[in-house]
Image 1 (cartoon, helix red, strand yellow):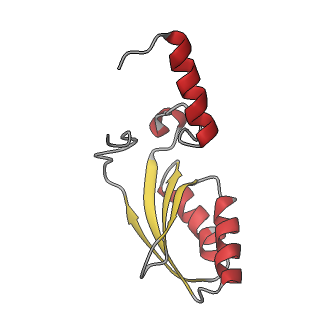
Image 2 (cartoon, helix red, strand yellow):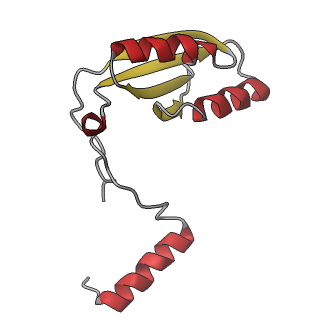
Length: 124
């Protein structure tokens, strides 16, 4: 279906209003801004009561190096995607912020060797 400019803009506004389009952003290459190191951090909480979950999620949201945080079923409880300049910066972030997040019982990390699929659009 081909739309001219006006109907296309109307359709975009409708999709934005309905919440189907949540926003627009520039996709920046992390290495281009000095973020050469990426890790996946798995977090297991001591307790999963609502206060602990709320406190953990609020605190993790405040850490700018956390690019994504997903709550999972089962163990671990969360998966965090973290970007820093290098290993030393990650270690400092891990010790100073991540290990001190509210309710954390255990953190397990793995280093990202290579992003194979990243930023793919949703399937049709």
